[in-house]
Image (cartoon, rainbow, N blue to C red; front, top):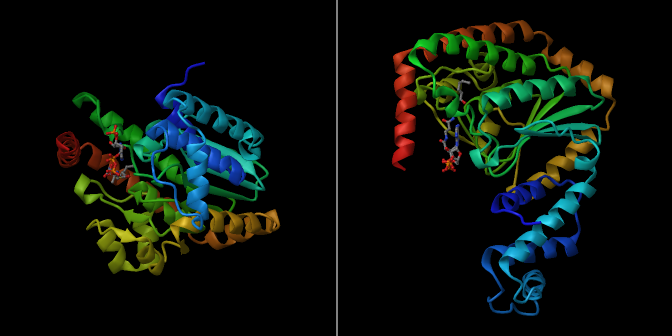
Length: 353
Ligand SMILES: CCC/C=C/C(=O)SCCNC(=O)CCNC(=O)[C@H](O)C(C)(C)COP(=O)([O-])OP(=O)([O-])OC[C@H]1O[C@@H](n2cnc3c(N)ncnc32)[C@H](O)[C@@H]1OP(=O)([O-])[O-]
């Protein structure tokens, strides 16, 4: 069977989602096949005897000799595929009927992975609807906590800008109304989520992917993450209840600079302002965060659920009110010339890149 470059890229992405460590021997094999597939036979000088890691990698790559790049690519895909079938998270708990998400349940944790890495996990209409569905399922399943994270180098680039295009002028108002309705129910599913909800922010976050963080119970971020809400440069207004949660979390002055004037925060800044719970070095991020989450997920289910509900109880009415107001405001804005011009500007700038 012949595999395409797309299959190769997909295998690369799947590898990042494996939870079971395949061990050093397999990792070296994967490294060697990847290098051979992308660069051809090893021609770099042999590292010194005392440089153990580099030498082991060099040995693995050199051992492939003159294996053609196509064959290396094929072997890489086959090896990843066998690891995926053996990985307990993907083999047992995987719910595979999502197109834009990867949803698994393992060790009492339901993990919702935003899975459009090539588009920096931009949230398309399909993804909005799938997240609503995944949260509905997670609310009912027997997991203790639910985690949202991204596949690839971004957490999420926010609303998919293509959601705004191909709308005929006659349909603008109708589309604005439908989008506001969908957004209200999308944000509502975060407000109403009954169990502890945790964001594992694996890279930069933009727009609605940032504002929603105010509705999570814990936010862990890699030190590579940034937090940016460029609403005014797109002619938009804040959503995700951020008009209520951000001033409450970080104070009016900081929230205003971020939500109105597009100030981008580093992970350290977001943490010192209370939006992020804790920041981890990128090279140990996944390991440290998942070890901690596994321990949290072994705590008594009902106690965690009831405690979360008590903590959020007094805010619920205010959150629902903020959500309704924000969606009504966006419905008006979406149909305005100011917003359409800002979106057109965005696409014109992109086409000149
Ligand atoms: C809900 C209503 C309210 C609105 C809320 C919001 O979220 S407002 C906030 C809305 N969000 C924004 O304003 C963010 C807009 N995006 C950006 O500013 C930059 O893409 C970046 C900084 C996220 C990444 O820069 P980088 O140089 O590292 O990478 P790159 O640029 O090469 O991107 C790789 C590919 O991904 C694609 N893609 C990425 N994001 C989006 C998107 N949102 N949409 C669609 N596509 C997107 C990009 O086009 C490209 O596709 P291609 O050409 O390969 O087919």
